[in-house]
Length: 563
Ligand SMILES: [Zn+2]
Image 1 (spheres, rainbow, N blue to C red):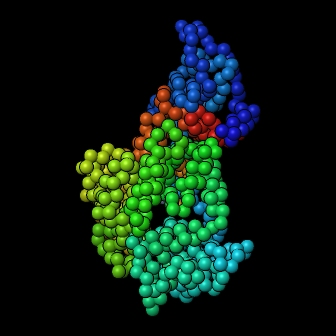
Image 2: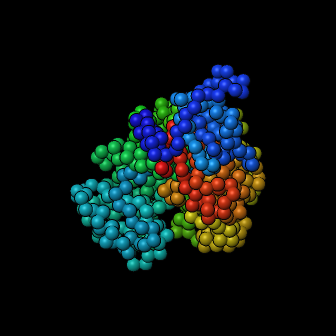
Image 3: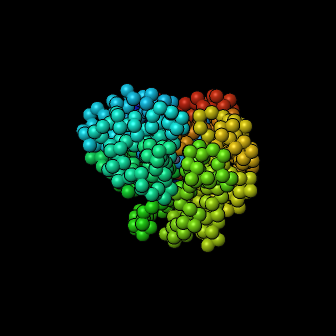
């Protein structure tokens, strides 16, 4: 762990005071275990209104929690002592839905605030240094502004700008991609091509392809583009290392992967980072279930990738699958038909993986030992996923199933999360919102009546129903900062500060099946902790959001220090 060691040395030199003392032998402790590290002068959060002043750590695990005085017995000359300066020590944050390793291959980053034609100049620079015929891959644009654009279509803008290169630009939600004619040619897509499972090739009023590929239609072309990149393996590794840096700087010690596109080579890149001892967070990788790829081929990969030893830093025991798309694009699955949709041929949205197919998948995967992390946004996508999980539960599975996003939940389905033991994972984007504000946002698509009937991002309601509520970032869609989501949850009145801390620590640990080793500060658990510059248990939401990360520790090793 060269990397960790150098950080550690740096920290010890310029950071904490490193007092070392002989073990005290005055309180009948004759041969006390000597700790590798002791954190003193701390406010160690053990749960609501319950604190310790000191932590002793041995072999990466928490050996002792208690008073300053009692901790002295664990200190010898070899012990590294960290004076926390009275600051708050929390369990390391766990981000249950984060696209940590993705995006390394992106070379073009248009803004989501302007249409493609409005940022033609910026886009044209993306072709610089790219040889003719090579793919240009972008990320960050916005589908809805593109649909409002009256003068141009993405295909016309991108054909003008990139006459010699195939180009694909993913919007910031990853549910729409913009392509030019060359890209469509290479992908062998024309206006008579049938839509793939879970995707749509959008057309203009003349029936011509307009360069917008929704959901899985875009994923397929993106896969082709990414697989064409020379040296993609190194690019993936770089992307992962960048994501790990962002995570440790934000106090995150465990990550639930948003999806691993294993047919692009992402899995091998993660294994490389693991083998090189460069993982600075525990990662639960979630291989993506492809809606349109032969099941046996996928099972062959899943069988060999399965890694259920939670003491390792790279764990592979949950898959990622999508039930549906997103309501604003008309691809989220909704119980009542859309009032307005860009794709009227699908009045209730689409499935990547239908309830029947999902039920089949979950049952087969249960046989291997895989639980699942399921993307469900529309109220019907949520219901169908719950139905599929209910079936596999009835078949005896006690594995972990968590559903993510949950932007629309029919009130009838609320209690089912607790009843079926399905972890509810949600994201709160950049600001606090009331139900009325959320309803106003979604009403143009699903209608005012339905917007008022359904529960929209129901963090509070799920919490009150007794479900295991998990908050996560979905980075890079939202800020990676756990403190941002925690402050928003408190500010909008969805959770108390204690509940919000749980939603980023012990609750996601449960969702990931890691609660026996992390997620709370307890003797015997892994020493995964974060020290904050502000006591967020007593701060206003604005101060919570701004709290500094002072130190991040994974398995007793300092992986980040602000000093
Ligand atoms: Zn995501």
